Amino acid sequence: MSGGIKFLLYLVSFFIPIVGIILGIIWMNDQEIEKKAVGKNCLIVSIVSIVLSCICWFALSALSIAPAFSGY
Image 1: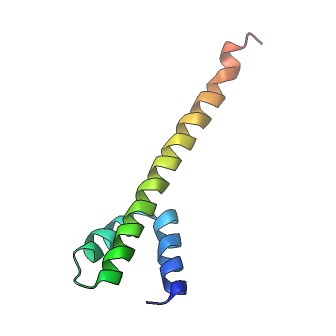
Image 2: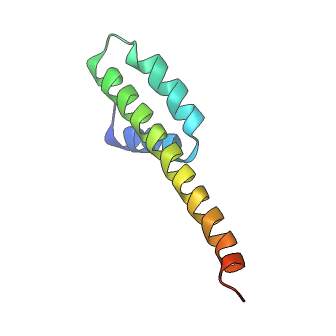
């Protein structure tokens, strides 16, 4: 598997996490060591993407209600 395809899979896993999770689960059970590593990395990238989006969502929610408590 070439480096460009790996990068594309990681990019897709970051922007569409459900694809990365499905791909990771399927490829982690493969016999090839390289596919297994790519599947594990896709799964990790997807989980990191979900966690980052949750953190950003909570931060934006907190910032949007902050003016209500400033007294203006």
